[in-house]
Image (cartoon, rainbow, N blue to C red; front, side, top):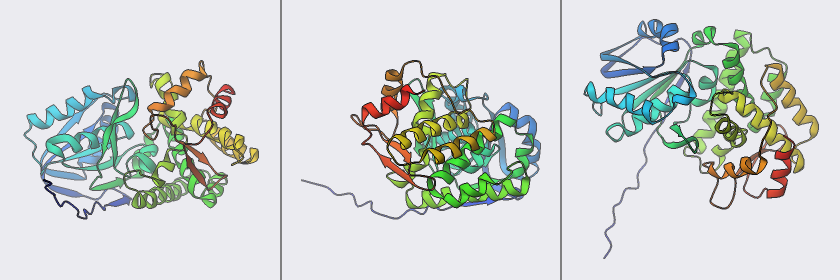
Length: 346
């Protein structure tokens, strides 16, 4: 005997990304703003002048990638239970990628899912992490290995927050902008090469283009069954670097920058990218003081860690390889010896 449960239906998860000053908004429900001490000290007063709610609470978690863990998730959840949040309540992620990922994940599992809004405060989170609904946390095995796809109800990108961004954080965001240009838009990369991203007008243009690029990809592949995996260019290598250095030496964007250089070297070895193109990307990253080298102590151990990547299967590693500037190849057919040869160069 078989009993069928007909659950085939269309759920509209569409939402708007507003790149402008945060609008004045009132939420007729319980709302919790999840943030960290640094962001709260700099910008919470401004945010509170823009939003109000039926009941409004502030949840503060420690600052840093090393705190993107179960303890921080539990802290958020306990606060929601203490304030008797229900399924109509809402969270606001107010911070960088770490805050956004954890807030979204907490929202996805609290009472099996409540709404949340992204208000990213770093360049990296504005152009990448806040868009697309990826949420999660890290564990001892690697980065973002626990999580869920849970789309926000809205994203508000306000350039005001970038005025207090440290230089390293700014550069880390530039790495994510470059990622999208190299994989999907050759003309965008040419624009970046000739642009000064420290100019606010130019930076806003770059943010808009990067967000539009990612939005186009997510619309085609929300849960990363194919095309969206291309946005992990540089991340397969970068996540191993972050794991090896215990998330303390490099910012995420810095590790991704190194990872892109590694992926480019693999692309050159495979005949998919010219040495000149690889050099152009490397020089652009260096222009914004991003690291482009890394000393691999044990290339065999580094290679084995690739298998913990979410895109990989039990027996094959999925690599995101640029096909020149403006193209990308997602493949699990990279020869092991070729990969090890590339790693030995580092």
